[in-house]
Amino acid sequence: MGQKKGRRFAILRDGVALIAIFIFGILIAAKLDADNMQRHAGAYHVIDGDTLALNGERFRLVGIDAPELDQVCQRSTGEWPCGVAARQALMALASSGLECRGNERDRYQRLLVRCSVGGRDVAGEMVRQGLAVRTEYFLFSDEEKEAKTNGSGLWAGTFEAPASWRKMRKTAEMDVPVSGFLAAVRHLVGWE
Image 1 (tube, helix red, strand yellow):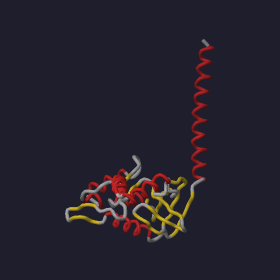
Image 2: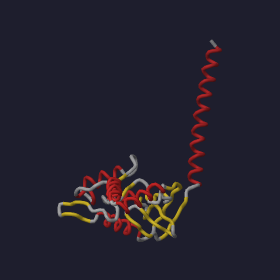
Image 3: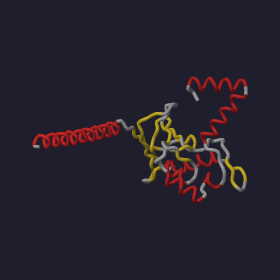
Image 4: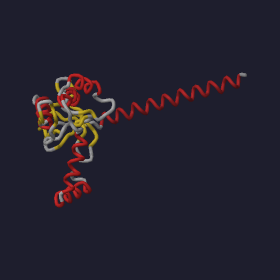
């Protein structure tokens, strides 16, 4: 009987030790991730509704996708330049300077960042204003729900998701012989 009790205790002890090692590993990984985090602050140049530049480097806001500059959307009053509106909104948010941090790059070598101004998450604010859609499941769902409920920005009418719009535009470029060929080469080489 004592031998069974000793085995149970050993299994319990080993289980607790394994969980402690696992938690310790997660904490070490989080610390290393934080140490690799690049921080940038200053007066950013706004490229479009989700892309910034500072000192020759480009940055992409994580978790959102904003309309492209030449994208138009529909409202009851007709077409409106939603891509230009998204850029203007990001310019207004960035006008007093931003603090951005990130440690990963996308396929275009832009640093993927979370930016804040005055304690507010810039990407979340773009989604709240209805000038960007969320791309991450857990990020900005409350902000997007608020924008939909209020009929803000893109949600005031109909729009094509920015990713779909880009895809359709690439397909249209490929229908034109020379520009289509060049677009295909840029896509294959990774220069797009």
